[in-house]
Length: 202
Image (cartoon, rainbow, N blue to C red; front, side):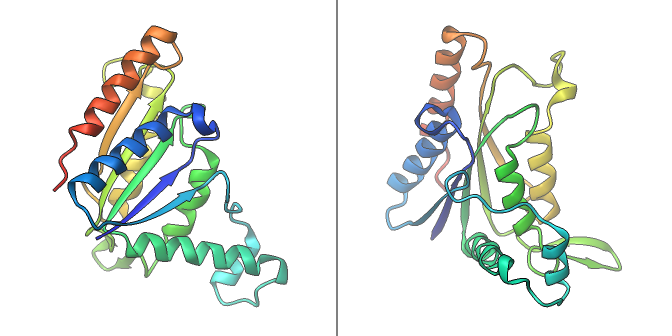
């Protein structure tokens, strides 16, 4: 079994999403010894955002020398994702959506012919054999029925992205309200860590 662990918070040791994603990985590792774990910090080794030159190279145009290293990095993260049986992703909410570093990673794994394909019936996801678990941290409360629910573009976006490539039931463990004061933060982190520790390992 191969597990891919990704973090995208820029806060390093102060990050809640990193703390929770690590707890998820620890729970799975202890429950199923022998995991082969690959870790990637998307802030320490960021991928470049896509440019016209990237897209041209993807269509067969000669690759500019300045892009060769980055294109190779993109191919590497795609290979990591395709090889993984389980993906654990730390995803904090920044300004109502995902960090740009995480968006750059998503742009490298949503590849026609690799993780999805077009057919006469529409789009078909090709990565549905994976388990995806996302550790979310949000400064406020954005759940269904809350006044801010309309501004939630993190979990809703990731559900769509992974569903598009065939992962129809991604799992989310959330720490919400961490920006509303120490008491809220402590309660949110404790709840998320408890959920991570009781995660179904199967």
